[in-house]
Length: 215
Image 1 (cartoon, one colour):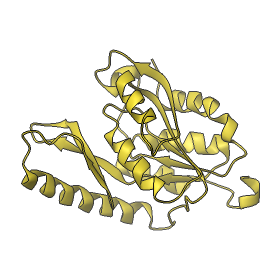
Image 2 (cartoon, helix red, strand yellow; image 1 turned 45 degrees about the vertical axis):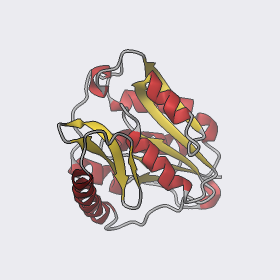
Image 3 (tube, one colour; image 1 turned 90 degrees about the horizontal axis):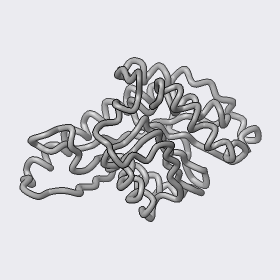
């Protein structure tokens, strides 16, 4: 059980301390991953950026992910009984929302260069892992040095699937859960992170941009 996202982030940061003197970029999945990403980025003296990807939900249960979408990529893992028209419409809708978020998040900053960097993908917890998987595939195309997924909690089978991904070099999960129902059940305080909070965290992150001080 984690007290809140700060508690989870501090625990993850200790597990990731070995990367402190490497060229790291912390890539947070919005919105819940941003409070954790900011703390981990501070701990590692690394820049914080945001992963623009989002799950695509089942037509009968939007919380159940059948895949995930980024601005450029898509993974659809479960199409049984789901029409192509639904998937196409949801893909368009999600990409429009991601473009809106891009415009919000990058009004006064540019996306970090991921080439030859240790990229740490952070979220506050995952269920199916589809959003993280599509994010890792997207990151892989940027030619990073290493891709690490750092999460407080996830189902054990999801952790195993992520570890088997050719796009992920390491998975750091504080609590691989055999009995998993929802991420929020593993936190005492799991209040929603709003778009306004997410934007503020990203904009307020103070990083020393001198590359010589990150290596």
